[in-house]
Amino acid sequence: MAKQKYYVVWKGRESGVYTSWDECKKQIDGFAGAEYKSFETKELAEQAFGENSKKHIFKNANQKSSSDLSPLEKAKIGKPILESISVDAAWNTASGDMEYRGVNTKTKEQLFHQGPFKDGTNNVGEFLAIVHGLAYLQRLGSRLPIYSDSVNAIKWVQAKKHRTKLEPTDNNDKLFELLDRAEKWLAENTYPNPILKWETKVWGENPADFGRK
Image (cartoon, rainbow, N blue to C red; front, top):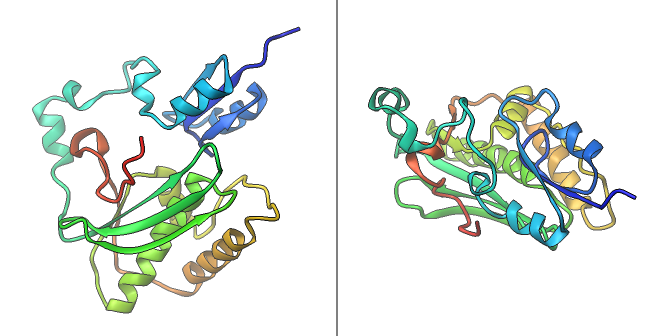
């Protein structure tokens, strides 16, 4: 009988810890830049998921750290726009709790915070954080850009629809209500604010990061 393995997906359609290869494959198959690895125990997998993926997987030719980048490559990426807001989410692998927030990129002053919510995912939090940020800036009449380090969430916002595989439970009704409200807001509103990718490999952690890695 094959020994039980646990699969960590750091980057994929839905990041998380999975108990079968089939579930893991659904998240990474055809996903550019997917990062994943198997572990022998659930405890090791959950610990690894809370850490930087680079600690557990080897770099390949298409994965570069900041020290691998040439001065020209760094120059092309440039520096972040400090007059902006940054958003991020945090997901507790043990409890399934998720929360998100937005901060002033320059000062790191917290502008909004929601959660924790039961039975969530990091991608859901990242998506809600961006939409919350857009609505927040609209109320202020601000054209400031928003930074997020989640490619998935940025794509969901651009599509005006979330793509979560999260299953409804008795505890996450509020999250699905917020997802519906976010999609409705995106369908009914336009915004001038650029949504930009936070370049962690060059700039360090997103200013809104919860610091729990």
